[in-house]
Amino acid sequence: MGASHGFKRRLALASFLKSNTYLTDDLDDLATMNVLTTWLHENKTFKIRDNTDFHKLAARFDTLDVAIGAGLSRFEFCSEATTIKTDSPINTSTVTSRSAPSVEESNFNSAIDEVVAELRSIAFNIRDSGATHMRRTECKTAIEKLSYRLEFAARTRPKPKRGIFGTAEGTSDVIRSFVTRREQDTNNEN
Image (cartoon, rainbow, N blue to C red; front, side, top):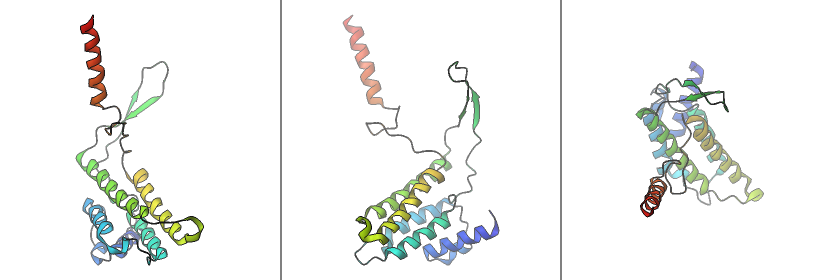
């Protein structure tokens, strides 16, 4: 990260959080993401009311977008992906696999998810009814753009897909036990 880019991010974060400590503190710290989550949740600026200035609010989120940059981390926890050649006659391409996420990586992704949840909560509370409230729509778009960028670009891994029972896809013990029980019942009848 270049000196001018780092200064720009520090200045943006200090402006967004209204604290000069971020001009000198380390930006790439998980605690900063936690401070952002708390700030977004508790600060009255982000509580949407009838008299909210949506133009200023959109500018605040654009400033936050600059401050976050590629994510508030050095990404030292990311390991190199290993490439595996498959022996399948159908698919002869190489497959890239990654090891299980480290604790630091899981904490980072969780912190990103918490910030995204707060952003979505704020965006949800903005009632925009199309062209009649363009400032509201622009503000909501700025928030959604930031939340999508964090979720799909700053996270180190995609969120696990959820199955119909609310568990991670492919790990449903309910279905697995049902099938096993059904097979046992069939075997007992024979």
